[in-house]
Length: 434
Ligand code: FDA
Ligand code: NAD
Image (cartoon, rainbow, N blue to C red; front, side, top):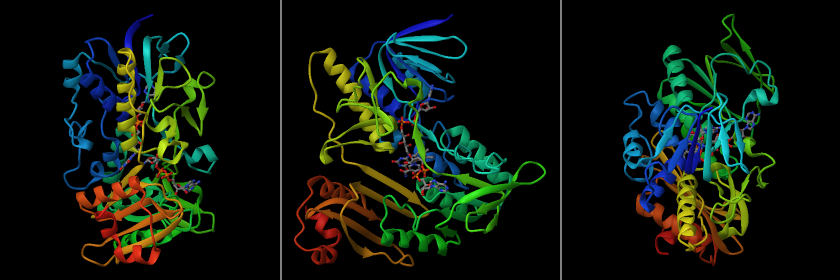
């Protein structure tokens, strides 16, 4: 049986893996010391592109155009880059067994990889409707989106079912982004959102009202407060209808499902401490097992600002946690210490011509400000969240880079608010003068 041994192994070849590799290269890594093992066939790339530019009808993004680290304005790490640095990219290789005590990872074909230090970066996978036993959910043309192969399958379906009827199941991130891009592809789009408004976990009713109205003006139908309970297929096994809990039936040529993600921790069950569905780490992304780190979507880490353990399923944290873990590994080798991770949550999205950013925590009272008229030529509006008299969270649609920076600062500094009415009047200028 083939066995390979490395000083450092990154398990998973997604966003966190790519940013960790860049940090290793910055800090100094010798050829042959580091390997990335990924079940994907391609070098790490900026996953957010898959639900946006990858699906554009005109000039869509394609690899190698969006390999990491272009998403944060850095140099693009092409496969050659790893070769030059002597970093081994072990692609199309799924690890099916991990023995953390024996420091080995194995594949079904019997390959074994030994590590001295392991960074777990397996991210998350999609939750499937078949997981809840939804009738007919295994019909053809019901799609999920996580990896570039999934996006390729969806692109083929968009071509095959030109101008077809698309039903999106889920009113979260995948829902709003795919809803927009499918409309841009001239499909007839209906979105199913089980809650009272879109992006229920983050948006307020007022924020959602803007996006819902904007989408409806574009011709996207939004059906709220109900779920898909079953699918009917035609004689080819292709989805034909979506049955809703409230009794309605929608015709569909394509269904795209975005009902959430779950962290890929199964390989390590019983071997490492878990918390809130993820692998528990400290502020250096060390797990309960010596020499094993966990970063990105699957790490449950101390969010210092709010004094609690959290998991964050967004790209900015994947990048920063990966860099922090590598810095911590390198520092401890030199007997040095680094500052604990002190993360400010940052989420963003882009749909049609819109673009929003959110920083901080969406807790407490809210204040809406700015021009939230969806018919405005350039709407710009936002919301502050205020808890214990201080700003905890800040949201802005249509901000400039400087304004978004101000937003981040206000969420980090948490200034005291004297009056909510005054804050509503001051709006964005409150943040820009901090
Ligand atoms: P990630 O999922 O990137 O990588 C995990 C890697 O591990 C994959 O390569 C996988 O194949 C591999 N793997 C898993 N199990 C394995 C095994 N057993 N053996 C070998 N390899 C294995 N966030 C945001 O802030 N803004 C945005 O706009 C978007 N947009 C967006 C769009 C889409 C379509 C998705 C799916 C997600 C986003 N996100 C996002 C979320 C963001 O992409 C996500 O938080 C990061 O990719 C997480 O990075 P990780 O490296 O942790 O996991
Ligand atoms: P999500 O958690 O954002 O949203 C899930 C949605 O599905 C919610 O509206 C939820 O109520 C709904 N839902 C749950 N169960 C349902 C059911 N049985 N039937 C119908 N609807 C149901 O998850 P997602 O949109 O699937 O995104 C997957 C992952 O990708 C997440 O980690 C997300 O953070 C990430 N992502 C992020 C971005 C971004 O940050 N811009 C973009 C795309 C994806």
